[in-house]
Amino acid sequence: FHGVEAEHFTTDFLINCGIEFVQDATNDNVPFLLVISVPDPHGPNENRPEYRDMFDHLFFQYPEPAQRNMKYDPPTPGFNFLSKETVLVLGVDAWADQYEHGRFWQTHMRQYYGMVKCIDDNVGKLMKSLQELGIDDDTLQGSIDGTWQVEQ
Image (cartoon, rainbow, N blue to C red; front, side):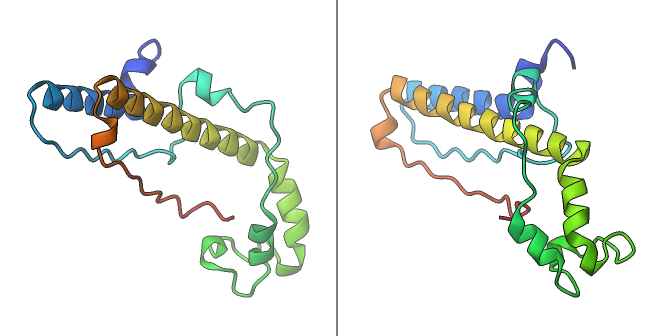
């Protein structure tokens, strides 16, 4: 995988295929429908180095609403995977502080935001290709965000 990330990373691959499809349809003067379902941002949180390391300088706080929701008994669905032995209802603040400063949370969030930036860059590349083909004003564009797992 190393050395071919730009050609084989899923987000890039799907957008590049979409651009090629639109170019072919435009060149053949046929109407088209293109739906691209990008699986990111989603585990396993893999990304190319430029996106993976882009947010290393930032510290990501654990969201206060997520911390508050953990205090419910039982916790809200996003947090009911934690056992009461792991996080006592009265010990949520201490647990969240430790979790927030831990390597997993910081790495996860840096990679997550790197994936979002990669998607953003690729959507920009797709939009630019529509402009270059002269069809951006005649093309209906939209998006759906299914990132329900973000707790804020």
